[in-house]
Length: 127
Image 1: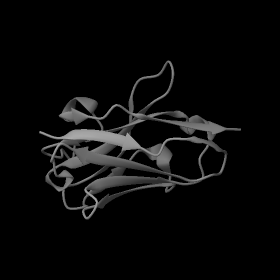
Image 2: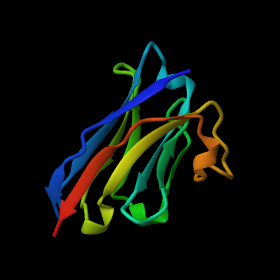
Image 3: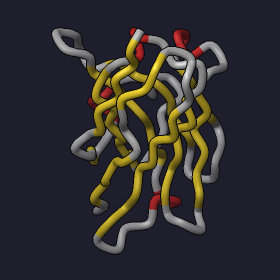
Image 4: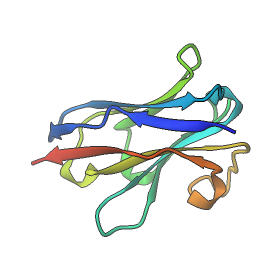
């Protein structure tokens, strides 16, 4: 079992970059899991953003990412980073990280496939 804690959310302007971190607490090791990022905007369903496998591969991204975001494990710090660039107002949402024991290459974007979730961190992009 692993407990996840997100950090790094902030209020930024259009075009800015932001670095989110997903850390494992309570002795869990993130390298034992596939770790994904989801987001949820007000009034919308939670949507998939990115996922990175146990060893840093494979990596899958939502179509809307369009090369702007990169998910990277930092095994030394026991975290997974979501580096976001060229942020747009439509990226405004609460960002959650989630962990799964097994990464499905078919259903990786389905939230129900993840066993553990963090509490989320708010990202707001002003126009």
